[in-house]
Amino acid sequence: MKFVNVTNMREEICSFLELPFDVADSDYIIKSKNPDALRQYFDELGLKRGKTCFLIPHTICYGNEVMSNEFWEKLSIRLREEGYEPVFNSYEEIVPGVPYIYLPMEEVLDFAKLCGNVIGARTGLLDVIATFTDVKIQAVYPNESCPIWHQNPMLYPGLNISLKEKSERALHDMAIRRVVGRGNVFEFIHGDEEEDIQKIIKHLEVL
Image 1: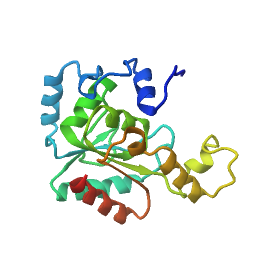
Image 2 (image 1 turned 90 degrees about the horizontal axis):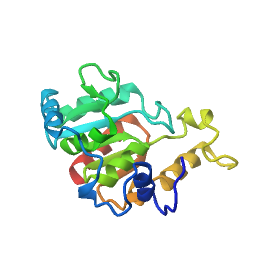
Image 3 (image 1 turned 30 degrees about the vertical axis):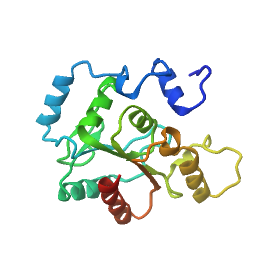
Image 4 (image 1 turned 180 degrees about the vertical axis):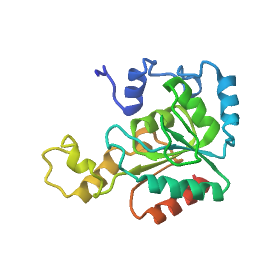
């Protein structure tokens, strides 16, 4: 992939999606081809507009083991206790009884706006959602026990730093808030599951 004359992540996203760099957030061109059908499907899933959490458990860079399925199950239960509905961005079931949907890119942004909240392992899809919507986003970065640090030597090659330092560096280098200048983005390194769920619930209300 080649980007020409880009200076920041937002321009990289526009270049990748073949959008003009000066496109207004409200006029993005990746729009749902049938927004009425998307809204109807959203409602048929039993989701609540503005009170649904779009959960993104998989990433390309970090793999699928940033958080365990048990984490997502505990989070889904807690979200429902707090009055939110969870729905996974996935082509297969992650947690029994929790709906999942795998949309083409032109549907993702409008779906995320219907949800109102996005929670996910750090992945480029969060950049796209953050750039073109104002939904609340919470991104979780891999900690030192994540297998990705051993499986992907392309991450910080040649740096003689600890796995903990790699996690902290990733949070600094790849922060969504830093990329798009958004105040309603909360990012943290995965730690104790119960404590992380508490953080997520707290920030649903304050972001």
